[in-house]
Structures are given as C-alpha cells and as structure tokens.
Image (spheres, rainbow, N blue to C red):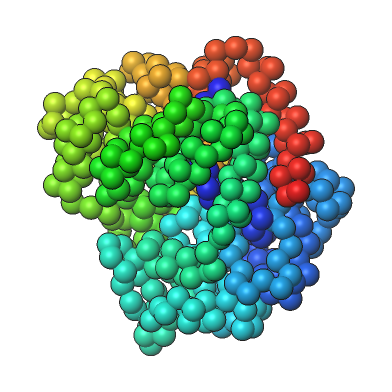
Length: 475
C-alpha cells in the first residue's frame, strides 16, 4: 500500500513535539502552552482531531483512547527545553477562530521561546522570546512570500506567514544526526504498522536521502521511499543520487509550491473568500509567476523526463493555472498536482486529457470542514470531486493517488477512506457531509492507496496500529 504524500523527517520529529490539535478553543491552547513552558504538560491523545476518535478533550483532560495513561501516541514532555515548538494548531476550528495575540502568548509562556505551527504548516505564531531568537522584526518580509504581521500601530502580532513562520521555527537548536536518525526510524516504524510498504516524501530536506541510504545499507529500511526534492535543488540531487539511491530509496522528481492553504486564506481561488485576509487579498495568492512555473516544468522534462514535477495547488484557480501551463507545453506524463482541494467543474476532465496525476488527501476534508463551510458556502460542491475525477478517466492508484500530508494530519489511511466514502466524520449525521454526491465506494478508495488486496484486512491493520502500536513511537 502506498502513502503518496507525506514529510518523513517532519513526521518523525512531530512524534516528540507537543501538539495543539486536540485543543478545542484558544484558552485550552494557551493552557497547554503554559504547561509546556513550565515543563509539566500532559501527554497528548493519539486521536488528534482525526475521524476515528472525533473531537478530543480540553488540555489536561483524560484521553478517551488511553484511559488517561501516559501510553498515548503524542508528544514527549518538554521539561527543561530551551525552545518549544508545538504543532497542530487548528485555529479555524476554535470558537474564537483566531490566533492568540502576542500579549496572550507572552503571558502564558514567559521568556521561553515558543513557536506554534498551524496544522497546515503555512503560518505560525511566536512569542516575543522566539521572535528575538529568530531576529524577526515587525513588518519584515522574507522572500518570496514570508511576512511578520503587524497591527494597526505597526507592532508585531506574533503571527507569521510562510517563510517567516519557518524562520522562527528553524531558530530552534538544530537536531543532531542521531536525533534525526531516531526520528526517521520512528516514522518508518509507524508507517509500516499502518500497512504501508511505499511512501512518497514531498519536498525532502537535503539530509534525508543520504540518511535513508545509510539506513537501507544497514538493512533497516523496510519501506520503499520515493523522494521529491525542492525544485531549486533538483539538479544537484540528480547528480548526487548515485551515492544514496537504491531499489528502496529513489529520487522521484521535484516539488514546487504554487499557492498557499485554505486556513491561511493564501490558497489561490476563483471565487473570493467570504472573510479574506487583508494582507493577502480576496482570492489568495500565487507563490510564483506563470513563467517561473513553466520554467520548472521545462527543467524537469529536460533534466530527467522519466521523473515528475509535483506542484502544490490547493485552490481551484491554482489548479487551473497549473493545468494551463502544462497544456501550453503539450501535456503528457510528468506532472503531479498535489492537494487539489477545490477543482472547478470545467477543469476536472483536463487531468486525464493532459496526462496529469491528481494526488489528493481526502482526510483533509475532515480537518478543513470549518474553513470550507465558512469561506466557500456556495462552492462546497467543488471540494475534492473524486467521483467526477474517476468518471473523467483517472485511474485509482495510478493517476488518482491518496496520501495524508503527514504530519499535517496523522497517516492512518482509514481517515481518507472514511472521508472519501462518507464525506464527513463517521459519527456525524449525513446532513454534515460535504459534496455527498462526490462520494466513492470503499474498494475504489482503498485502490487509490495502490491497495489491490482485501480492504478489510488493511483496515484492521491500520486500526490495530492506531490502538496498540502508536504508544511505541515515543520509546
């Protein structure tokens, strides 16, 4: 079974980080961060806002899955940490639908540098200590799309977009090679327990391929890994791959980001957001020009025509732009569009017509429901039109691929199968389904993971890992 979109290093690292994904409101998030800063945070629940476990407890409450024990799959305690990085903030799902202010975050965390990454990894909030550690100034821009946000008086709000978020995130002490190896091995073990024998890493960091090569030569790699390098490093990785490439570890292509995300309102859409970010614009934004995108397409074709360019495009306008550029170059094999959370009806048949692979993560429908319903109440019928894509000629497991984007969400394939078949959480009434008419059958959903065997067997394997195996990944 194939996991077609994740971030292996970040997934491994996330297993030892505090997570806010089960916080149901801003107050619970601030309480959790305050506990982390004092070094007394409780372990988090493995459910993390997923389909199988539903909404979680407030910070500090018992975990329904583990019975309140410390055996949950969740972040390790961070007592004594000099720099706290937390993940999984789902701001749009909180009643306040906003990030904490800088003052609120400073009061909760004091002088310990703290950076909280949004679950989509396209924005973050940092306290004053972390802003100082990263040398970030109010209003500063970091090319190509990073921004340190300010209020009406020009003071930093703590909110950081794109590259500014990663400037604060990366101000933390660099992991040691030993820590990276440990984290990657944990992630691989988790993925194997979920039933995967192949994973695709999108936008792989430079250290990952050599490390995987070492693990493979030592006989410790039981999962095939296909790597997509950042486009600006693709040529170098092509030259260097003979050092680390093997049957199990291969370079699969390059990766670029064409737009942002729905939760940060930076995904490029055809119809305006109901509540746009004034710093971004009513329809989100493109992260590069048409000419730059076409240049990446031509470069991959010229350097390695047998490999692919993977393009992050979440909004329907972004999807259309990418298809337009590919059509102008003649179409054909060699392009994957990642996420495709909104697709206009006129663009659905173009995937098969142009030979483009559609790589989606249906599990995101479960996480993004609040922002979709708030921002696009009249466009919900265009969310992940899976049935139309298959009817237009895409083949599950070949040109229509499923993944999770872990650690954005957990990598349990059951979540995407439930989202693809029910279009809602299992415990919700059918009236809450988003684009119910786009639901597909369970066998087709499993086939999108490249699973041609017994889906019930795979389902049981994933459930077993979730209930019994995840506790091991903190060890």
